[in-house]
Amino acid sequence: MHPFIESLEYRRLLSTYYVDLSGSDANDGLSPAAAFATISKVNSLDLEPADTVLFNGGQSFNGTLTLGANDSGTAASPVSLGSYGTGNAIINSGLGYGLYSLNASGISVSNLNFIGTNQPAASSNGIWFETNLPGNIKLPYIHIDSVSVSGFGNDGITIGGSNGKSGFDDVRITGSNVFGNKHDGIETHGVFSATATGYANSHVYIGHNFIHDNSGYARSPNHSGSGILLSDVQYATVERNVASYNGAQNTHVGGPVGIWAWDSDNVTLQYNESHHNLTNSTADGGGFDFDGGVTNSIMQYNYSHDNAGAGYGIYQFSGARPLNNLTIRYNISQNDGRKNGYGAVDFWNGNGNNGINNVAVFNNTIYLSPAPSGTPKALRFQTAVNSVSIRNNIFQTTSGVQLAEIGGKQPTLSLQGNDYWTTGGAFSLKVFAKTYSSFSAYVAATGYEKLNGVTVGKNVDPLLNAAGTAGTLNNADLIEASLDAYKLQSTSALRMGGLNLFSNFGIDMGPHDLYGNVLTDPYSVGANEA
Image (cartoon, rainbow, N blue to C red):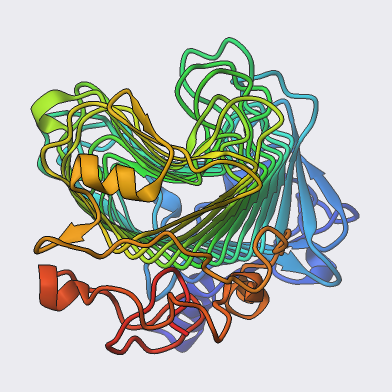
């Protein structure tokens, strides 16, 4: 190849295009001095791997960014969209989408603010990556970082497939602020099938985001107003996010939740704060949830508080894929269940033999005071479940709030090594329509809280440092350092007073407690190994 031709080819493969309101679409866009002026010009480009499009920071550009399959990059050489100069550029889409991508992959989006203006409910998404390709393929590499997405009538950020189990692999959404949208903040999706064996999306990471005030809307045919919602995903980690004040306008009975997953496998929810999430219906508005068809997944090291619904929900709906092999450990719930009588830890099975199976809930700390409306419980089983164990947890309530309500016949439910404590009111615990006013009566009548015939549960003051005072962090990086209110005092009987779940039941207790303390035998009760 002639050296001049070769240099032009190399330049084309590594093009950086600039966009400035004072530029001209007649320019080549290859320098700030020769910048394009409009989104329309950007949309006309045939972007190649390693190409970059940069908008002048602080300026507002009207329109919708669009990407097609011919605009794809690779994981090694992604197509990048971002800002230059000072601050983030604004993509002001009005009533349209902020960014719409169909069948593109190898895309990086960073340092842009996407704003929808006065959008009606169920209209446009802020950032939307979709594939409709056949063949159950996984398009690689969608990375979104340090963006702001607000004011859209549908989802803030949505990624997934609409044909079989085609979707995306290597998805990362980090460091972003997603708020004021009318449906969900961040969500993934695929085509639901109760008989499927695969998942549309894989290797999803959602971390260090703020997702708040995504309101949902009235009369939606489905739930709306969740913070983070994963569906049709295999292998996902959701960590260090704050989800708050979502769901206020949702009227659908079922959903929303601050952070949750359904129809997914191998999901980890950890080190997140989910608080003050809401619903305008009789259902949900919780902090965290593993819902219909979730398998082989873990909730750990989270802080849930002041949510309308459950702090930690485990729910299975009719027609879902099986739900099984779940772990909920070393979490804290403070004053959840503010509406509709939810449990801070809450179970419901609506799917018969494909219902809730093999769930281990251990070493969580639950604190619950009376709610302005409804009758919350620290622990609630609305229906029967299969092979669920509740062990080494602290259930503390005040002013007569019920410690537990265990509905339905539960022949395979195990409760062992938990501490039940209430102040300012009578002990109250309900099992299958009978309410017990003392711990001893509860144990004698039900056989719960025994191991090999010996009572291993407790009815003692856990001596937490300052239960009920932890407040709002709004910074998930502070979870380990800022929840001293739920550490055990040095004289607590729960220090080294827990069961060894591995030696007794073969349960992996994990590497450390919520505070980072390495777990050693003898173990403690609650989220603090002490």
